[in-house]
Length: 284
Ligand code: AMP
Ligand code: ZN
Ligand code: FE
Ligand code: FE
Image (tube, rainbow, N blue to C red; front, side):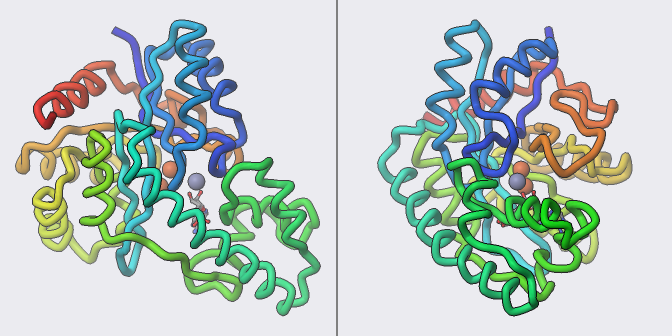
């Protein structure tokens, strides 16, 4: 059995490779399967799935939804979603509309800070897909307002920074409702970004999310320390949750990170995909 990568972004959101490019790249790297999990959009799935069929490579239709959470951020992955499901599409269109309203406000804030940036430049950086903060970071970097990608977030774009604008988010319960409605398997992404105070707070949240419909935790993730991986494994085992993993490869911001392997430490067996398939079949 080969290896898989179940967390990847394409040009449909803020990744650098188009869906067909990432599918070909994954095959060339010798992986057995990937999931395409763009932020709040499934616009890349059609292309990714058909490229997979064309070249004989397994592509799992996925999505990554930002959910309401404080003080950190909560992302929920949906695997094996039916990307034609009307309710899912309607909910994602709503999120697109919210982003369209947010993005010009970020430009305005940057302009007020004395930065000469236009929305057209950001649109161009997005390459026609959904616009996200990494595209703003890219333009800031090109125009030499920041020294690197992370600097753009730290000084301007991250939560609490002067050009940050909040965007609408569904609650986890709502997001899991439409993921499950589209026959998807819901998974809590990279729990480290939740910024929970302690283990017992995290455990309470995982329990709540399990009741609301998650079937797994993304245990294996490049930013998870060995200690975190062990903690998340324990939680997954305690609540009967699947353990998934992925690199969250975007192709831009994280130097040295590659599809499938992360920074060299990741080896995710295909059995993870079999677990997801079994979970999906149990539910429907
Ligand atoms: P958006 O979809 O516009 O909210 O942008 C979210 C994306 O921005 C994430 O997927 C990350 O790639 C990136 N991002 C968010 N916060 C940070 C941060 N503090 N540092 C670096 N990148 C970040
Ligand atoms: Zn992203
Ligand atoms: Fe994420
Ligand atoms: Fe991601």
